[in-house]
Image (cartoon, rainbow, N blue to C red; front, side, top):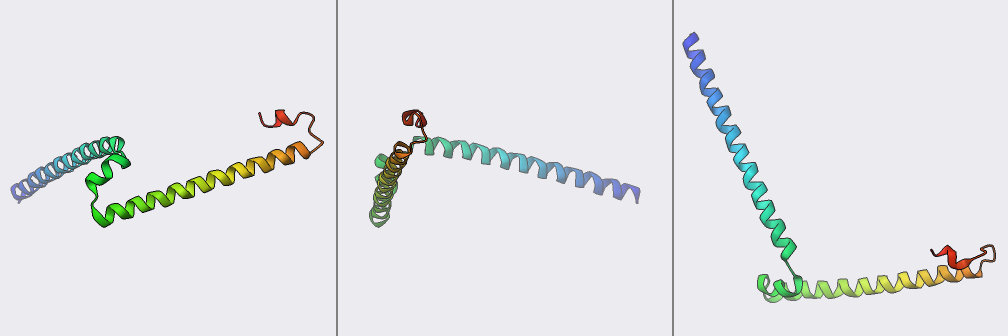
Length: 105
């Protein structure tokens, strides 16, 4: 009985070691794949690489999305500039500030 228990325990220990080795290899593979993906994404240029990886309708959809996003960004920038100008007007109109130009610095 003791011999059977020892055999079972040694088999379990080998199984645990094998599982631990598999998990370690899996983690290394994931890390290696993450590094490759990171390098790919760092080097990826939408303007240059999109036609290479996307075709037809999907490319047209991505281009339309990009154009919409650029238009929205331009609108946001314009709105922010208007806000800044409005705030400048308020500061210059407020007589409690001795030096309105210093308020912007």
